[in-house]
Image (cartoon, rainbow, N blue to C red; front, side):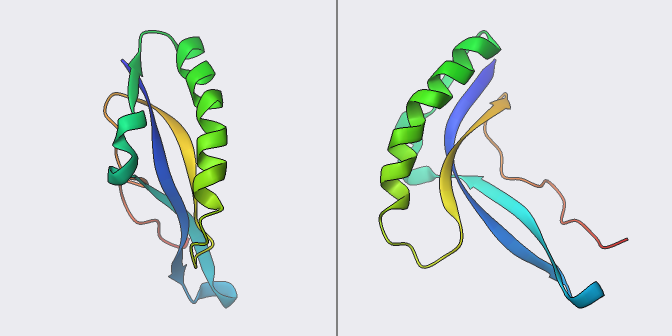
Length: 90
């Protein structure tokens, strides 16, 4: 099953190496779980993801004090936060 859900995607500080580095992180939005849907095909999932873009645009205009934003994410199986492990500078 392919799942589409609204995530809050943000940047997290990775560390001070090379003047500081950041990485993308995201988690499913519990307050917007009513938009989560499962699909049999990737085409259906991508079409629904496109339908959620106006919803996310409206949520992002809500004045959050962060660089993060809401966005539709397509994933295999149940939606899970990412990354599953904190990245390390190499």
